[in-house]
Image (tube, rainbow, N blue to C red):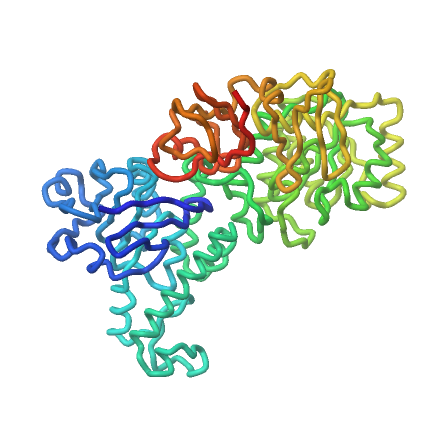
Length: 543
């Protein structure tokens, strides 16, 4: 028997524990799988090609009588929570990125989320990063031992003839002893240790983006994964403790970027104003603390809805500029916008202006941001008034912006309503609420009742029990009949709002308890897992 529990997630990648007869094994890792799973020695001629049709696979596929449970893309998987599953021949999928992702998604969505994934004979230092990122946990030394037998020296950058490698490239024990097999094994161990490190730091995607650049198939796998928007988005936390590195054009397809943009369009409720000003972003974030945006605020003086045009997020309304990742991204600043950035940003801005038609739209922009705004205006038929073409922060541009707004009424900017709409997909009536706002701290009350506070690290609002009354039916986790004395484990969850993602603020409700906290896994895992923490409880309401 095995047991499997995910301890930490970063997208589809995870750090977990696999319980074996030899004790717990921290994954992702490489192991002597024949010793861990003796049943593997009795499965000769069981590698049915991954592309085999259902009839062929049904006839020849061998599930195995013990662990790990073999699965095949053409068949409905027969595995349970806690099992280790094996995909025979998965190393062949790496050369076919579209099939790789099709098969992976099909199998992942058919299996319990708390199953360990084993890719036999597949792991090399040059590919284990992409295997781990796509959700594989366990590996063996077969592939690196085969490379050693072929006289190939394994590095994260690829496999090279041993005689072409300079002595100073590696000083591991294997190289010091002229043992190629040992070097290759140690190189795989080291790469997996790095993968675990970056998952733990919540920076696995940044690590993968750097590693994948040298192999076209790996870049293609990442792009095909990102195209599976629902699959990736529900497995991606709503916020991380680190900044989002948007170092290439592929950042436009990242789940965090797509989610932010989609919520700006589908959820966010802007202030009631008839004039919008489009502003450039700033290197310092949140934008409002930058010198340039303080000068913009002095010129606008609250007389317009403020929308920041930026890449890779497209559009950041002022009210939600502190929400992850709007205040948490890094991008190379060159002043050049490529065609993909322009098209992405223009599409979002055009859709936003179509959904929220303003009487006037003022573009206080220059360069690529202004070009994107003009493209958006052409798409949605909006007339732009340009005030910042000759450098938005210049005195002349700021004076022109102020003069353009002469006679316009002040807009009531509502950070609470805007944030709650984006975060919880709710239109909350904030009349009567008092806001104490001294960045980065914010507290919201109605009368004497505290309703919300801000998480300075993510920009999200944390509802109190009174605050949850303003969010009826949203982000609830229903639990079984037991008192809450700590964190909520997945086996105790009866149902969860499908909108819940890891990191979301949630309300826990049960016959004996009411608690508030933060989701430690997405809703689909809460409902399907038999192990792991579902909600990190912050406060329990005494009954």
